[in-house]
Image (cartoon, rainbow, N blue to C red):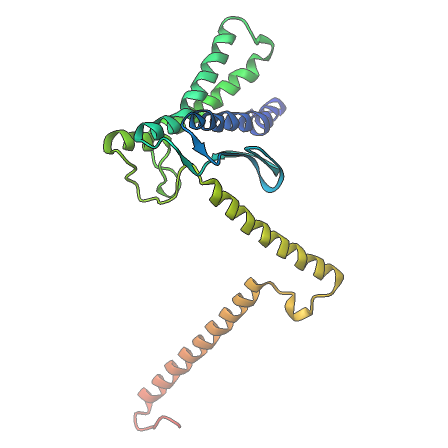
Length: 244
């Protein structure tokens, strides 16, 4: 039976454990890639508008389990370099999980044993998700699949053009575009509140386009019906001429 304690455990897992595990995972990328001379590194935490940007840290406004590491390039390029970088989050999580498990086995952290056991569970969840070669959303390979392809074929052989680890420059460009859209929408909302926006301009572009499409569909449907009725009438009265 799902009780209050289970609900509390779910909340702790979703808002405390998972974000920390994701942070540790991305920290593995960062630590190892720095050894190979990574260019323009960025550690992004959260989502939405930017709150603080300091050194490599980019902290966003909205709390979310998702955080990621990005960079533009590495100085020491080789298959070995990329294998080590993609293996970094797997190895980092394994080290953290085994360390916590050893502490629990030797009598440490016993007062919070339930919390740490749950923490270890989610760490190994990401280890399995990262290490077992598989294709994920839209056929995108996980880290295990990339490592397998690099070892066997010497390159990635999937059809995805985008990088598994995003480019920091591209992340910044996407962020700027999203913020421009947000600013335009906020301006329109303020105009609506103040009554400065004319009634005919209050419908969103999407609604206007949808209305035009509906009108075109109705027109096409009416024309099709008229043609069908005319064909039926001509079949009944073959001598009748089509009116000008």
